Length: 250
Image (tube, rainbow, N blue to C red):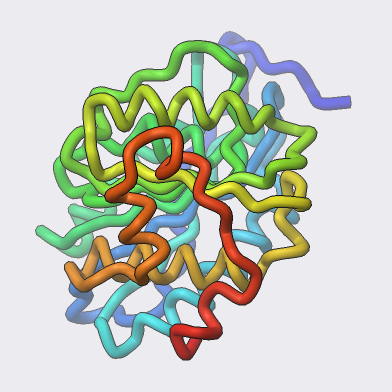
């Protein structure tokens, strides 16, 4: 059972950026990965969630060497979202500021999974952030803010069979975001659940195309460009085709 958290008794800890992956001296952009977590917990971050984020970060860093991109994984103070405290969102906001302090005026792409996706969406309003990728976002159905996403490229990705976080929550949030920002789209992964294990390669390829396109200002792959251009509901229920990425030479 998850440990319930109270702001009065949480141990003092600092959020931390993991070691840089990829270009470290003259970075032209930063990919900041935000792992998953639990609804309420005062425990330290999950090593399993951190390992999954690190695996994606390494893949993106390898692919982004020629683009001089750097990837970091954020280590939260606490494992839980913890109701109104929204600790991971606070940590994500700190992390973007820390990236700017270290790297200067470079574009930042936030890539969050599960609870980290919600944190990425909340922290997307920083002026350095050019893109937000929310993978299998953990949402409760409460009304989330969207105004901070104006001017950013925003991509939602979620399994149609996600039993952990209702896909309709992310659809409704994407719909509200699309109403104030045309650069929003959402992909549905049919016959896959919250962890997206069945389409891991396709999700990784889509994440790479989106992040690199936004940070490096290059053309998106045709399915992604079509999804961004399409009006709701089509652009918010775009199916992620099996084999996405292979036709792009990835």
